[in-house]
Length: 190
Image (tube, rainbow, N blue to C red; front, side):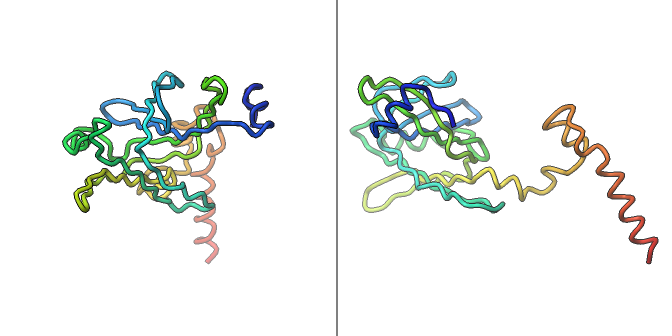
């Protein structure tokens, strides 16, 4: 992994400043937030500072199983997040929409944005409204991209499907013919 020179210098000195960031690609628009103050522009999107969002540590694991992740946003009138504002999430097209988590590297001396490193990718699954002892919050369940491994009819090992992913890639060009020849041989041999 190659970092910008200034960031590498700060990391070597042990002074790197890291903020967590999240990018929501909902049907009504793309939204970005990071754990800090002010705003940061990255990849054509303005990420707004928000110290209220809490995100569980992503479950980094090997295998094909989808690993859910939980994110919370409490209602805090001091920040303009009243319960009725949290209800506005119902107007968003969020189900199955992409969510990306990043580490934002920031210069501790100048607060300049230096680099973004994606750390997790998945989809918004369910966003529930929770209330307990007078406190209200949104609780989102996010699924990893591994959920695609279990969708019925989602992907096939075929030449046609591979062209959708990588036009010109000939890896699966003979997959259907070889499969048929194998099964014909197995059944004719018996």
